[in-house]
Length: 234
Image (tube, rainbow, N blue to C red; front, side):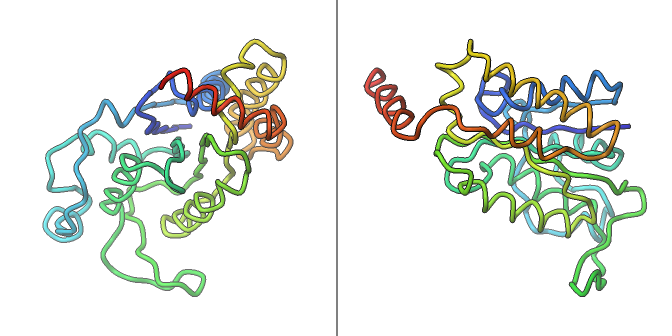
């Protein structure tokens, strides 16, 4: 089984999003899946120019000469797509959105009705499969992820893939002061088991997702932690 993971955190493997993605990918590797991990910070990927040459002149291939030429074949072959992004302004960050916009090269220009909605069909050489979203947010409540979940479910419908679930970490800054506590070990273990499960069973149990998103400290205490953290930097 082939897996592609895109981490758009500018802090790469040292960011708070990576604290959840890392053990998840460890579980995937342990299950002997063929995994490719990319950081958008290491790639040169330009904005989609809406020229549609990938639909007409060079079908399935973008006319721009950048690192999307590396990613598109990986997306074509992967059974599972993993998108990991921090939340800044109520959505995925810019570099992740740029990658997703450029994926239109995997579609055909014709329109079809699928489940009563107008869609573009995927090209014949693009595998159908699953999508997982991984994210961290500094804000307290899980509802801060709602726009992202809605977005990726719509994205799955457009690309004819199954949305398996999302590994979400609210009030993620709390991971730092608690990094030596048992609760962090529990979160890491749940993420690792989720990675193992997605390969072996094609799903992720709600138990693991709930453990990953569990409350780490009272909201009032967390707000104090946030404010004191900025005081030390000012």
